[in-house]
Amino acid sequence: MKTKILIIGLIFIIFTNLAVASNPYGEIYTYEVYYNGIILPGTDVAKPTLKIGEPFEIKVNMTVYQEYKVSGALYEIGSGNFEVIEGPSEMNRYSGKILMPNESHVFKWVVKPTDGWAGGSLPIDFRYSLVEKGNPEPVLNSGFTVAYPYISTEYYEGKVPSSDTSPSETLSSPNSTSSESIPAFTILAAVFAITLISFRH
Image 1 (cartoon, rainbow, N blue to C red):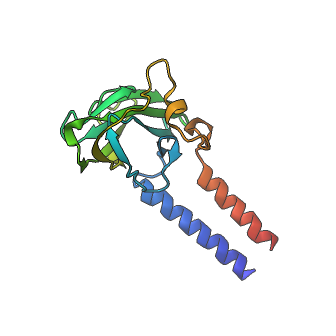
Image 2 (cartoon, rainbow, N blue to C red):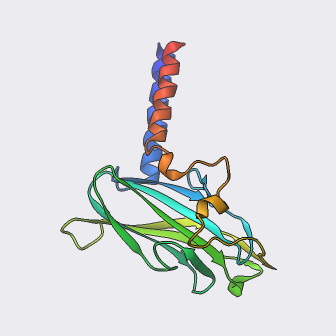
């Protein structure tokens, strides 16, 4: 019995620490990050080697627990080192959407590197803000690095997605799962499953 209580206690502590570490403002939102359809767990950063003009997809699925205007943007150091092929905004520019409690929104861009930083590595950040109704000041302004690609001096000769082609069809892994089909509370479900298993033994 003591072992079961200890296991449940440890699971609760781990889950609490994860929530606090990922969200210092409390449970007002969660997010999931995808690079070319593959989820980046925790604080992982995609570090691909890309050719000049090689497209890649970045998606961030945000879920809020209160009504907020959620704005998101992809940011680069300087300008002109990456170009947006498809997406809600150009590099270094925000797009926004008002979300109701427990509603999700996917920010999605297809981007390609130019020759501006060929032969070097350059980070791409996702920046976001949450604004409450009736309050012009954001309750949260934050961001993190999504990808840190190395851009080679070679040129990409493959297919580049157009407005007629779904980026996920061109770029996503065939075994990957889209963010729209992944529940917002996957960690919580896993915790409950482990707890149930511990009670059976």
